[in-house]
Length: 456
Image (cartoon, rainbow, N blue to C red; front, side, top):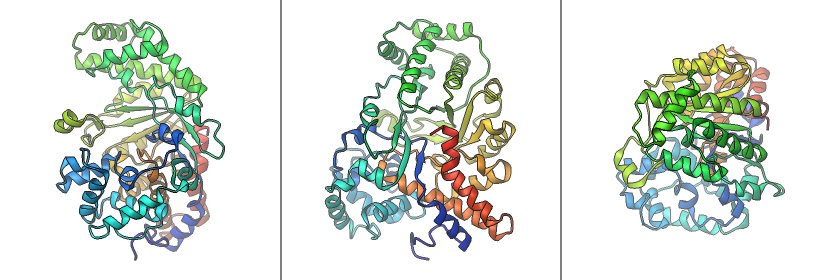
């Protein structure tokens, strides 16, 4: 079996190959990514292969560190070419990790290069890709069109003016580029810079924020603004999905204490965060938005990376001991039948809890794509098999790229669709499922299902 062979890559049966042919060209609906919308709006030429494949990708950075590459050649002041040569120098060592497949898929699909990256051909690949990136067909907008992206949802802070989204609204032949309201900074009251963020939010809405009611009102202003810009969903990154019932008076006391510069007890932070989750749920229910909850990331675990480079640099981990069932109970019951919720988890050990929660709440609560460390052929296969056996693939919320680099949207989506086809193909070969039903499920999971769920 040849590496990344079109007919056999991740497809281990004829039934899988037949299913994949039915879904491989469906438009991409990406309900969660970290797109730089300014990059798309400005539509400048990319400069080189490092920029499009590794300059913003902490997956790549982590693996380079694992192979002993100096930080200067990862996030430091080395030139992009020096960084690319360092990556190519250890690229064969990445075999078995999905990053090895993703980047080779990008070369194959976007650049038409079938060479395997190694120290010998690194210079040649650098030159070839640099020449190709000078073509208008490789600018951001053209790449999105070529990948057949129909809808993509960026991740945006409530105070974002969304000027780049506005610039893209009337551009002909482009996917719908929708903002997603992510109010984590307004909820994470335990963060050191929390009062500073509240000051920025106050300036954004031109309203003084001195009570928790003021805070909720200010956030509602931004929520309305996002709604005017086509938003269909919110996103919430939480280590623990605190959502139990908390009184307004208690939440206000915690908020005023924090704004006075006093240190909060852990229980006080949990009270405030739970209160805010309910307010977010109310806003979303009124607007008919989907509420996406990403659970379990322990942020900035490695002090050296955080102190020297800041957040989103490869220092985050998962924690299989994160509590989910009890913290979510009040919230999900409060909005039962009123709000659509999508649950994502970072640790595969949480699949049983989330799958049974989704099953208990029917169509209102659905499972999102295998996230982050699970976003691999192994992780996606396990999740899809589990969803199928406990919940329903027909209620799966769809694939999301979760990507910071536009060039990989197609590769990540292709990997998912191949894995889904193979999972269903194995069910067919075992006599568990007729092929026409499996094909229907695949088409629904890749396009019709998420389109209906998110209201695209």
